[in-house]
Image 1 (cartoon, rainbow, N blue to C red):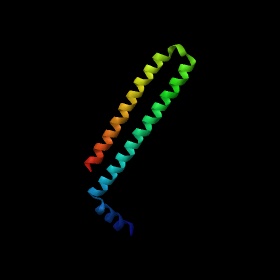
Image 2 (cartoon, helix red, strand yellow):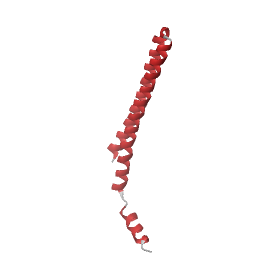
Image 3 (cartoon, helix red, strand yellow):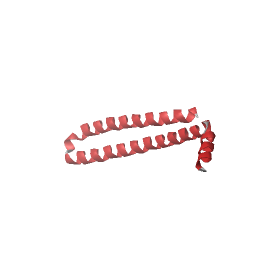
Image 4 (cartoon, rainbow, N blue to C red):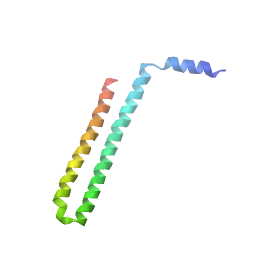
Length: 92
């Protein structure tokens, strides 16, 4: 029965600084995932755009316009994720 005092000591030591550390780690992971997701999404759009323009060159203008609009939406979502992570970071 030596585990019970260890658990009680751990629970007593769990305070605001630990919660702040978890929040900062979550903010860092969130910002990283937002950046990685945006990079993968824009890369996939670029690859698909190039492939579709090679298949139908006469539609290149419309394809490029649509791809730029989608890339802007992805950048907006990534920026939103990074701003939320920065807000969490500044709170702690």
